[in-house]
Image 1: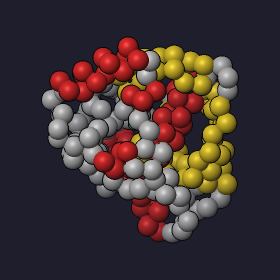
Image 2: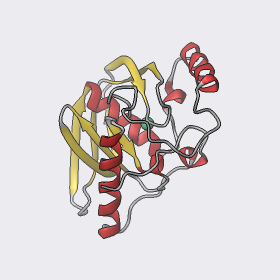
Image 3: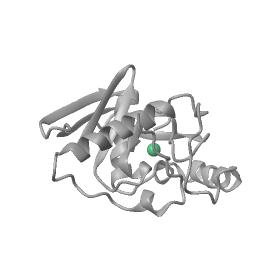
Image 4: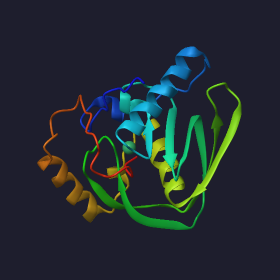
Length: 180
Ligand code: NI
């Protein structure tokens, strides 16, 4: 187990686009293990490498009992949409309705460099969209309707973690394992 501190909104690493992985080595496999351990400890449904301060295009997910990871993802999204609450481990305790594609096909690689496809609907589709956004420095608050975004920015200003960008292990995380 190597649980890492989760970076919170305000930490510049969350706004920095991550670099593609080019070397599929032991170091990368340790990063995947750290992401899984940190995600499950939170607990969360997904975690992207920048959230633990690593600027590489890697994320993990834990949705409906399926734990996995994806490296250098590219997405194909359905026109059909879903709407529902979405949270993020970098915004402890907050969740807001966020529209996403209903279905997603995510192509990428596993930790050994083999091509893999992660395909899903609903929460898994939401998760791969949310995590791939993290790799581009995009956060879920960017995807909210203007009214919800205003509410989110106010809640962030009032949050007890505001201005405290480097920590946090909040266990159990109070979005009950659904935050991404
Ligand atoms: Ni997130």
